[in-house]
Image (tube, rainbow, N blue to C red):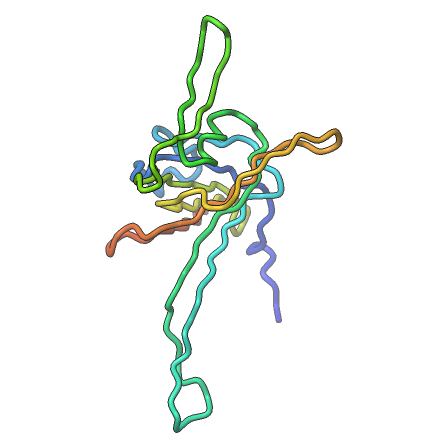
Length: 188
């Protein structure tokens, strides 16, 4: 089987957050930072991983021993990473909101969790991953509606760097808008 070496990709991805519904950069802007409405999460550790877990249910009939076909019955899209920059804004993102306040008098910044009832509608985020695709050109991935859905942890250890571990899960947007868009730069 022949291999097309230019289709191989290697390199880090940059992660940005925006509010759900943030204006997405145009495809023509694939080689520039996303711009207004998008905030970088800074450095990451161990990569930015996009996972699409699809579940197909088999269609079966008594008259045939083989599975006749399958139908997509569930899909989970997730983005996992370790945020290496332990800012309070990144903590706010990993915990789906809260309040960051600056106190200029005391030269401090503080974070507090949201503490509303569990029935409160969460503040969804959009995620944007800028990475490398084929031909060492840019690939942009937009995950349009996400929440941090797994436990968030960060440890302080003598011999290990502290990071925020986070797992974002994508959600349905609408019948006319896909939850995920991937764009590759194919310019000459």
